[in-house]
Length: 392
Image 1 (cartoon, rainbow, N blue to C red):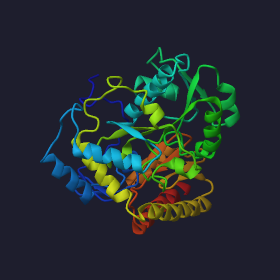
Image 2: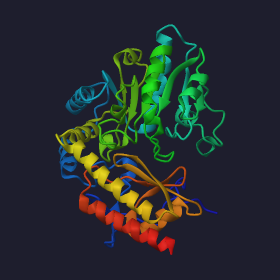
Image 3: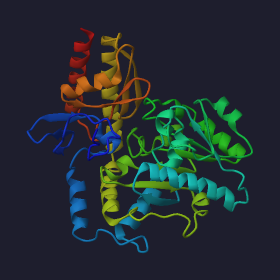
Image 4: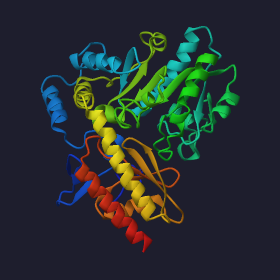
């Protein structure tokens, strides 16, 4: 058997996309699909948003790469704006979410080492979490699907249920931090972690631990706030971000409070491409839109409309849909057996709506943040049509 030129580590759909505009993507022969996957929460403003295209093409004619030995104007501007609009005092730029997680794991360990507590290196993580594909990130995730065949795993992670009492029992003298997604994406669009954030913050303060949030999927406006932690009324000590931060261009970041950032001294961490002029120019363009007055209010408004419509479908097809989950425009339909999420995703795609599966038999629904009411209505009609066919 001959291996394909593209390494088959993804179960790709038999669909080749050619171009996109707004919430739609097209094949070369003109087939049109409504994209309610958004590159898995990456295309925050849809496809080929004019402001993002302009920012990228303008910078592409000026400066591509200069190495992190030097500054660039987009880098300085984006850093200032992210600090101004978050809990953070400093930001480290990279290229992806898993790199931001990896940087955060290093920052946690370095923080305690710098403060004379090198024995504190273990991080509590949670069932249902997904933190990426690097060796550190798969060890933090700790599921057979991500770790099988890659042992021995990096030591230092203790996984518990999303339950505050379980967290308390897991704390030892070696515990350094708690790492959690406020809304679990891959794990099934669960908002249970968001509910315990205030208690986790209090626990970290009492025990001298760092609170480390993974907002790679749920951040940058996805829940209707710039970051999901804002819903809980607490602040973390460090936070990983990516996906929507670059609106489709590879851009990740680790946000840190000053006390954490100061531990990473010159030469202790780095990246070749992170924070390059092209990525940070696009990142600034994303913020121009997402931070514009009223934008996040509209995300919340569209979320309420979409969630209400999905709940109506749940009531209409109770034998298929068990629950509507999520926050903002990170939503999911939890299906009842014997209906399988991946098969439903295939049927939705046949009907020209793009979604994908998540854990716990959930169909993940992630439209662009600038989705319109008409596009929501179109998506709901397709889902209704698909569920009706399945119920028959």
